[in-house]
Amino acid sequence: MYTSHEDVGYDFEDDPKDKKTLKPHPHIDGGWAWMVVLSSFFVHILIMGSQMALGVLNMEWLEEFHQSRGLTAWVSSLSMGVTLIVGPFIGLFINTCGCRQTAIIGGLLNSLGWVLSAYAGNVHYLFITFGVAAGFGSGMAYLPAVVMVGRYFQKRRALAQGLSTTGTGFGTFLMTVLLKYLCAEYGWRNAMFIQGAVSLNLCVCGALMRPLSPGTDGDDPEGKESHVLPAHSTESVRSSGQLGGAEEKGGGPGTEDSLGDTPAQACHEKAAHRKDVCAFRVLKTVSRLTVRVRKGFRDWYLGYFGTASLFTNRMFVAFIFWALFAYSSFVIPFIHLPEIVNLYNLSEQNDVFPLTSIIAIVHIFGKVILGVVADLPCISVWNVFLMTNFTLVLSIFILPLMHTYAGLAVICALIGFSSGYFSLMPVVTEDLVGIEHLANAYGIIICANGISALLGPPFAGWIYDITQKYDFSFYICGLLYMVGILFLLIQPCIQIIEQSRKKYMDGANA
Image (cartoon, rainbow, N blue to C red):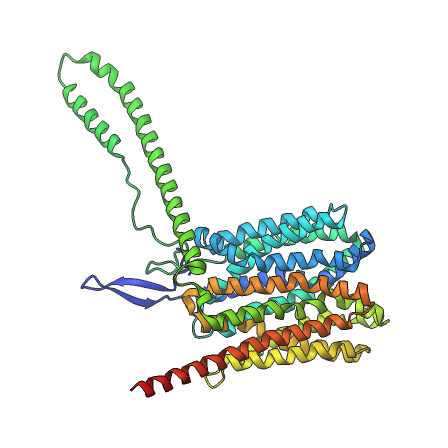
């Protein structure tokens, strides 16, 4: 229910009978909508791409701080997890400030987190600066990027989301190369400092998220004010009237003293007038801000805990359970593959073309292709979503069995393509809850994904510390992922059974 002042998808026009009729906004599915896709694309590069490349920094932190793999992996998982977990809370910022301001503030906070992390003296310091601060900033920039694409597109929403989220694949490939180069040339501390400067581009991306104005002119980025600020307050009008009367009375002979005092009196009254207007503007601004905050909090609260709560939708609840188990299976390879290839003595081949880059590149094509396929009228988005999930689970189970570079490359390509279903998540979410609840619902889904990302990499690290192998972590995560898919399959069956039972009971009663 993030119906903020900037997320309006239709214009209202007055007809001769003073009724309101809906007119599609000129930028829906075109115009500035593609600039919003471009902005979201770069947000995915700078946020999700850099997070998927954290395996490079994870190895640097292992060498620098000499901590266990499980503890060190918490840094990366905290950053990924917090980015997604804060999704529902970022909704309050979106309702109050709008997507543009929220994304800009998030870009500043993310950059600050990277810069402060360059001065880390231990892993626990990174938990705060990189895991929490940079992660929270990433969340503030990420959710608006997804929501704005959904607001700007209707007919080609799956394709638009697919194109924008390909930034994750491009970003993973580019950021892996960039971080490797920076760490080799300048050390990991200077690399994080430079990356903090690069992250400031998130503010530019946020500035491109032009809100859809409620006026008929779609080019007005901030919307039109329904009321014009009056030039004079009541007190200033009254004082002006008194001034005019004094001037009329002072126009005759014998009033030299009053004429001599008129300029000084006029100056005092002008100063009082300016103060009145300034105070009026301040009060009006505070009043508007208070109303916006109260309305934003009310919409946010009702969306999660009110009578229209999303948790009354059982299919959506099943979708949340799926999200709790799904994301860790995708995140673990990115964090631990650089070390896995070292254990298999495949470092030289991996340096030529990293396995994470294979996932990233194929991930790009997977998102675009799946987005195009899902937009076809004869194809069910839900069926495409389920098929790709099964493919990804199968890949996770097979990955530990591969000990050659060629075998790992094939499985990584399969993981990359099947994980393209992430571009369909906003579309599937909208189908479950409707466009008016998309932002709230998607915030919950990415929060569940964040919990999965938060626990997945440390869990794999702990399994390695105990067994000296990563194999069991993939098997366990694959099984949990399968449980999540079963939640998606069982719930529709229950609904069908209940509907059939209801029809049978109605027929029997008739």
